[in-house]
Length: 219
Ligand code: DX5
Ligand code: ZN
Image (spheres, rainbow, N blue to C red):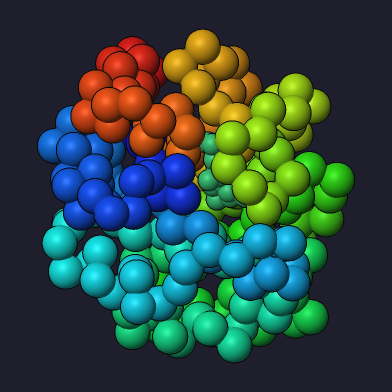
């Protein structure tokens, strides 16, 4: 299994965005995590397709659009056109989960499905065969800089056991409150894609990325 760091640009200094992202890429971050908030599914509003398209022109990183948006099926095609490599939607936000996942696949992107901290792992099991990645939210979505919810570790373990039964390789991504001091617990529980916003972009993004990569390379 591959272990990957996905810096969340939500915590970046937007006036220096291109440079900040380049610092993560140079230091080994293969993914970029792109938090889209609609002010409905979550209280806040972040950024959308034009920003992703602009970033696309300056990086080779794999871009995952985490859509914290009601009825995300409405925007799947727009994010593909903007240059996303993967679209991750929330189970709780979709009226038709299967149709939404199928649409992402049809547009030849990788398929991600996410659950909030209050949603049980059992709810997403019916869709496992349709996804490349499951995102376990370890904070309530909507804001960066929150504390990791410890009960997420049991959810990661439960999901990893269920994935093993399928015989398929499905990534487990975890998002929210992950820092250098607790990332090993998340990896040990069975996650292989680590989202980090504050822990990467508060301070020196290059140095922070390098430190995360040192840990990830031990796995
Ligand atoms: C929260 C977002 C996260 C956020 C993580 O709703 O989905 O991706 O940027 O930020 P940190 O790492 O600061 O918790
Ligand atoms: Zn996110």
